Image (spheres, rainbow, N blue to C red):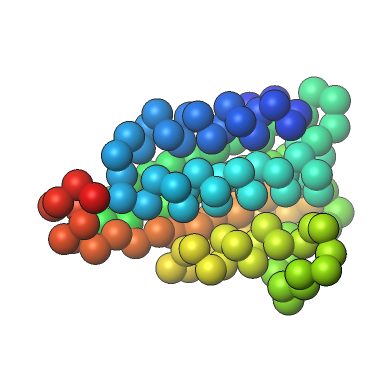
Length: 128
């Protein structure tokens, strides 16, 4: 569990790095958690004073499931078309590009945004 502040994004990234070690999709997992944690802080009640968010990682075979659970809010996370002229709005587009699948569960009282990263068995066997 992390406090809903910007410094916690770095802490969440460190958590992912420590948990996954040399996992083949480590960089992608770190980027996804960074984007989802940023969204939780900016667009949900997790960003309010005293707010929190939770990062969950689950490895099953050659799949890694990444989840960020926030404290909900009035707006549901949405994927917008990529716009290179605007400073924001790329988070879920990045998540969508890097993951095999992703989604949103929950409501105004708490949401989980999740993504699944697939690793080839060969990459797991070689450790790269």
